[in-house]
Image (cartoon, rainbow, N blue to C red; front, side, top):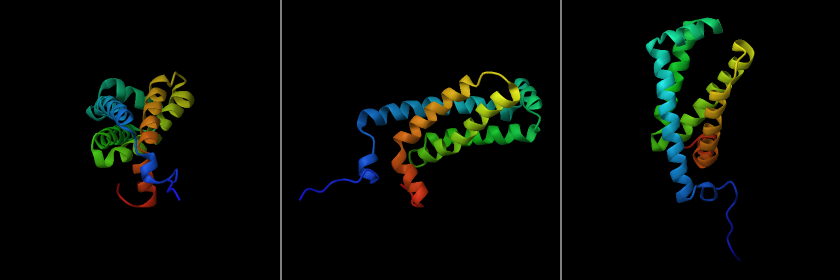
Length: 138
């Protein structure tokens, strides 16, 4: 009898060497983008202050968004927390897309591109994400 691996088992979802390299490249690029974007929100860049004035929720939301983006970026580059970072950033970008469409009435191209990158990381790091959902560290 031959042992088979379940499609949901950790061994079946660990990325190969090439995919792992691609995932790290994307994670580092995403982290750089989110540090820049979140940092400009936290630093009070006049463009960000104006943007969040237009959104109309208040400047506290700029600080929250910036903090989530910087925290997610840092989590993306730490090996044990890479899936947590992507899981944190996905709803932030989904919210950004909706805000661009519903409130700002402009193109959500950049948050959409970032969300696609995050989705790639979530897919490639699904073993760590499944461990998170199941309540154990990977």
